[in-house]
Image 1 (cartoon, rainbow, N blue to C red):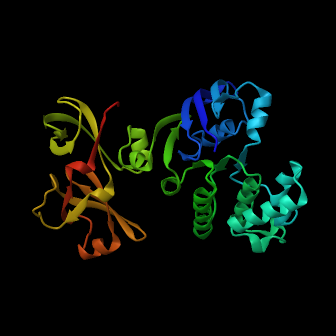
Image 2 (spheres, rainbow, N blue to C red):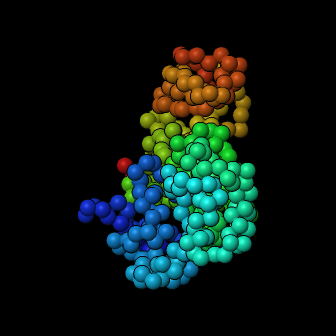
Image 3 (spheres, rainbow, N blue to C red):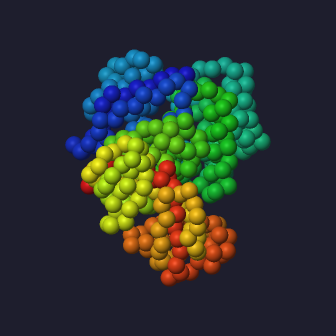
Length: 360
């Protein structure tokens, strides 16, 4: 299980920096996900970590050794890594031969090859496809072959670039099941890039959020999705309620925030007169038709401005003098007879409000 550390690495193409000052410390055996929008620099970062490219600035340490400028050390380290592309290439030959090719290139003997290929095909659920031509497979099946081929050489680090991009939900579910099994069974270091935030939550122990070539936050899935450190991360991970305000007073950890004349109570370490953003996830807000007794410190009367169906969920925009976005189940929306212009009460706890300093 190899570790990877980067110190202020950057990369530029045509004189323009695509990545800037990226600092990572990925432990051996860790599952680390890099999430971010398309074009954020995720693939470039993986190519640098896999030593396919040399960074324009900074250093990369593999198992504590700087491999940035030494070609022989990079080649040695790369033999301990495997990379699964977003759109994997398979050769016009059987599934078995596709998976075996890396082992053949390394000069493994036939008996060892058979053992390792059969083992990884079983692991990814493709054993019965062994003799089938790989070019005749579906997208999800092709991805599983690519994963098997990467695992056959027994890497210490596995890189995955958007492993389920452009796959249907059933194929995506199967790939995630395979990856979860690999993570628990193989005990290798896994670094994956994905724009699928829930996938990162399900599979990774830690997540790094990259936007515009910079890593803005690193933490556990809970840290990233419930306590984002800045407005950009909050917006990306789906915190729709980002309310600008000023802290009026505080009582120990409980603060009162003035949001355009409306008072919100929250738990925060910031002091009086600080300009802040109050972040509230839509699923942490409840709706009722009548004002009810509750331990929650924040209740606002408003009218429904808009409703959006989201399959089994309904997204509700409530005008409380400021907009609040709420997500409820379709059943709850029907039980409450929610319609545009209906008066409702939106309630949330002080502990559901995450406060960050307002930078803009």
